[in-house]
Image 1 (spheres, rainbow, N blue to C red):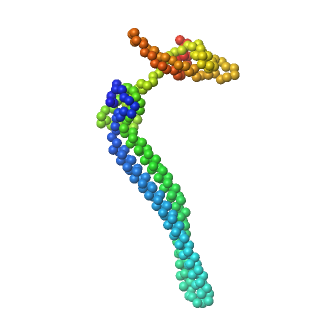
Image 2: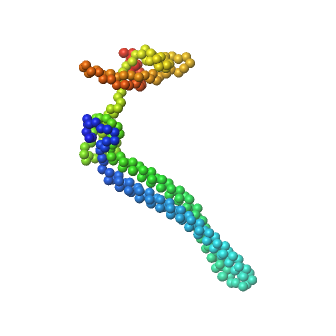
Image 3: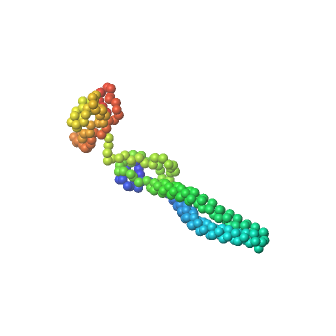
Amino acid sequence: LCRAGNYVVAGTPLLAIDPQRYELEVERLKSLVRQAEVDLQRIEVEKKNVEALIDIADRDVALKRRELQRVAGLFERSAAAEGERDNVEATLLLAQTTLQQLRNQRDLLPSQQARAEAELRLKRAELAAAEIDLTKTNIIAPLSGVIVEAPVELRQYVSPATTLVKIEDTSVAEVSCSLRVDDLDWLRRCTGRPSSGPQTHEEPCYEIPPAAAVVTYRLKDRQFSWPGRLSRYDGSEINSKTRTVPC
């Protein structure tokens, strides 16, 4: 159907671009989205685990601190050796170091989570774009009309922005006409619109007066007619030779 001169109805399949690379890209990005979701879930689990470990480390530090106080009391009464006290103090320092490391790890998790969420949003956006590209491998007639140009051939390589087909919309047509200024003034008075001449208290109206129109065409002894409307100016200048306004 995709040949110049054919009439096609909106929704008619016209062309198909090889979708393999687009399908692979969609699958690749789906995998990246799943990976980003897993990374985000891992951070959530890690947050809970770190909080639990911090609670344990807090209790461990409290135990080591009480143990140090007990050994220090014994040392003051000459009931414990200095080396025993130093060993307990070293154990306390090690527990405090572990607790501080866990707290630092907890403080870094929010930034890691924010980065993982941003990465997930990015991958989802890329996936959405790839899915749109995949849907565009099937070229569907967006409107009903006559194909006026179909420059591509079967198995031809095309790149983005290549013109694949041109369709002329047959549901509407624009017809140029030239109206005299007094005709436009008459239309304005008939439609209740102010004149576009000099105004004292109001801004001049530069819009064309809306009016119904009938387009007629004669072919020998037959006459065709189409209902229409006066739509817009075809430019903003008056023809200097005919003193008419293009509409």
